[in-house]
Image 1: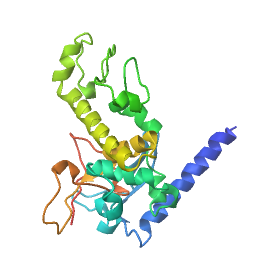
Image 2 (image 1 turned 135 degrees about the vertical axis):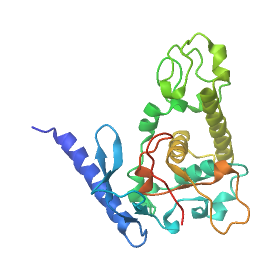
Image 3 (image 1 turned 45 degrees about the horizontal axis):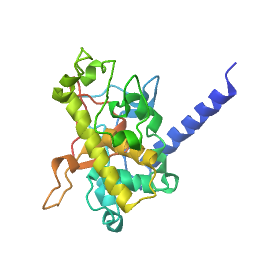
Image 4 (image 1 turned 30 degrees about the vertical axis):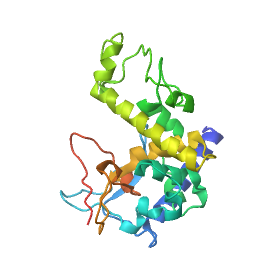
Length: 255
């Protein structure tokens, strides 16, 4: 016999997925798909699956420019509240300041990972003997992963001899973590100055979401582009494609 609580959770998730699918294909969004759909993949969250045999070079998804969540989505009055902030930080600030359930992209937001998901999977949230919540106090510390007795997973490229803490600073992958935390700290300082009532946990959730779910994108008809790292947008439906730096890839082309 199934657990009533588990059944209820399953029905809620099914309803969210159905709502998101209807939202995507609504003319207001104008997203079109060809031979693919998304579904719940065991132990992996939502992902894209083929509905039929796909041909090489075939267009799978088309998302209109109007449907992207970008810096152009954010009112200028809100942007001007922030003195210095990255595009990632600004997108996160806008999301953290919004009542997501009342926004036009609420059905899309229901498919986003939770903060708990990020705490389990993103090294920027980890510290010392295992995984702990990233706090504002931890963000303000001068060191990262102090006295870590366990090596990072292979993907992080952590030295295999944990005692050699001096090696940490020369590890290119750890340097990436340091850069991420420095970037988050600077963005958070900008947000607290302009919007002091913003919740740290809420902001970190959306900052990590933008970090994980954005695509590189150069806005059309723009004379001067921002720095390369700031040329990012969030793209509904397409953000459910798995991606990798090696192996077979899906190519995102802006036309």
